[in-house]
Image 1: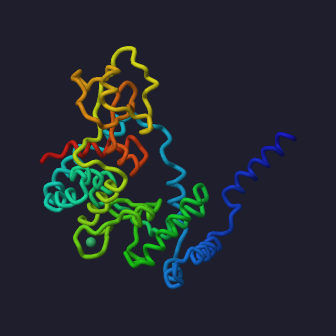
Image 2: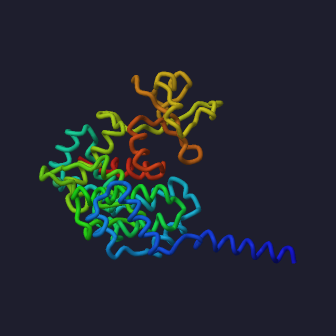
Image 3: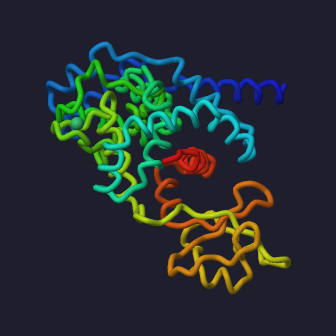
Length: 319
Ligand SMILES: [Ca+2]
């Protein structure tokens, strides 16, 4: 009896966590008030929320993200297939002049820009067809990360308010990542840039704007022109593995690593440079010393697997 009532209490609690909120329609009204408080114009609010809808598919996508963590090799096999390498090379050749120009302006590697484009949206072919205002409102309503998505929603409304894109063209992923660079609205406001000089940062349709926006992002978060992202290394026997860290703050100068016996993969000496590096092990038994540029990519997406996809795809591009 006790057990049974406990069980029904649990069931009640479980259903309450899903639907304790107001209805979606009422939630939309709350968001409109919230947007007004945040200074979004009446006109934008009235048009932006017209026809806003609950995306059940976004909620299930959010709940069904893969749980099993693939090894780095398994992940790279899926994320950097041969056809994507071929595409990256074709796109690089096609847009070479623009890419080199933008790469020079921002001090960012053109190959990394193309690789980001490929990993994020398959070179603009898959940038998401969700209505961004609806997707963000849905994710805020779902509630798992309500504060984050409410803040992204306000940023999306700000983008509309500032006239960067028309409401009906503001498309993205189920989580609200927009355009060919898959920028969240906050990233758009912080980093979107105009690559072709027409005064608009159109990350949805214009490759030059996509490249400039990605380059602007990386250079702003600390990309160092002329440096690589890192390199695979070999550790000496009886190395202190507690020095492995996923945090840049635990970096040391290359010279220090050399004194600890760390070598390039294959056994040659590390290069001599003042640059700080930190030691990661993205797959068991495989070690890399990584630099500021790795951190810049990690800032873009906190997944080490993501960063390795980008650098591997970039490395496959020939001049
Ligand atoms: Ca433009």
